[in-house]
Amino acid sequence: MINHLSTKTLFILVLNLSLCTFLFPAPLPVSARLQRLHHQLNNNGSLGFLVIGDWGRKGWYNQSQVAVQMGIIADKLDIDFVVSTGDNFYDDGLTGVDDPAFDESFKYVYAARSLQKQWYTVLGNHDYRGDVEAQLAPKLRERDSRWRCLRSFIVTTDVAELFFVDTTPFVNMYFEDPKDHKYDWRGILPRELYLTNLVKDLRLALSESKAKWKIVVGHHGIRTTGHHCDTPELVTQLLPLLEEYEVDFYVNGHDHCLEHVSCQDSKIRFLTSGAGSKAWLEENKPHESCGVKFFHHGQGFMSMKLTKNTARFVFYDVFGKPLHRWKTSLKKLHTSI
Ligand SMILES: *[C@@H]1O[C@H](CO)[C@@H](O)[C@H](O)[C@H]1NC(C)=O
Ligand SMILES: *[C@@H]1O[C@H](CO)[C@@H](O)[C@H](O)[C@H]1NC(C)=O
Image 1 (cartoon, helix red, strand yellow):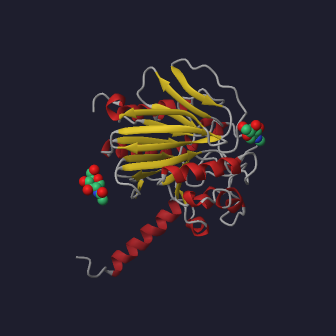
Image 2 (cartoon, rainbow, N blue to C red):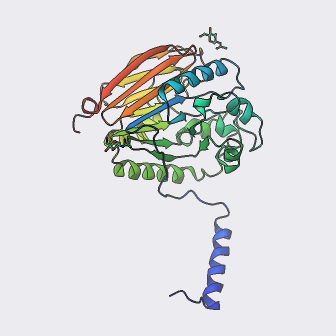
Image 3 (cartoon, rainbow, N blue to C red):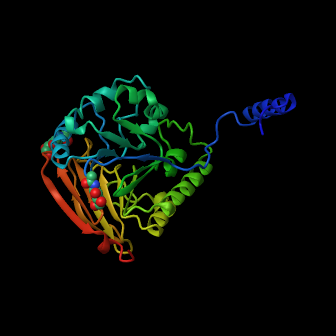
């Protein structure tokens, strides 16, 4: 039907395009389906991965020690990939796609063979203080093909689905009281529209998910007894969605600790792995409606292993010593299934 466009149609098209550019000089954040990445598992019916957060400090402050232990555990578990909960590069993200910190804090630190897997990564508030688009750029994947950082996206496997959510733009403080920090909000503004669309996209993705296990990953904690406490914006805007669609685990960083929280009014397990390098900073605080099953102030990381019927996770310290293990079967977690 569109064999030939008339000159008039073309003219109107060009006019429309230029009008659009004139009216909307920057692209508006639009609602769209979240990008979905399919990950083929190593082992039939079993998914294994490590979770690390708050790490990029050029190997210093126990970052390298944690990395070595991750290599050993990754080898034992034959992991499929690594999840980063954000604050990938301290203190202020990357300066650009050529920033040597990418090699010094990532490539050369997580050098073990068993860690040469995809790294699925979200952004933390410290990443937003640098050139955010550099972390998202394909150029970085040319520097190290493991690197996969998107704002919000889905990783689909045979066993579980992981929903990665860009939580920093939810937090009012960074907009209303940024102190001395400059945040790179390109691609986020207008903020209300960005957040509305993100919640809409996540709702759609969760509602369509047929996965046995649903795991949501974000930088900021929803329920935590760590230094930063609950993130109220996420409690009101994200948590109801996670409850409605029976998410099993919410996994975050931001608090520089390892933590397992469960709440009276929720079936979700709240897991913090934000101890890739920063640690020993905070005392945990009592929580009104949630209990702490495990809390460690020092450095470390977490592993997760899932089959169709079972889920288990383990927290390890800087020496690779397992500090806390937990296991469940699907039936116990959600009685409706
Ligand atoms: C993988 O597991 C499924 C179901 O458990 C089975 O039907 C299939 O044959 C297995 N495939 C391989 C390659 O082992
Ligand atoms: C590194 O880990 C050890 C053992 O937990 C701890 O004693 C030390 O303080 C840590 N160093 C830093 C800089 O956090």
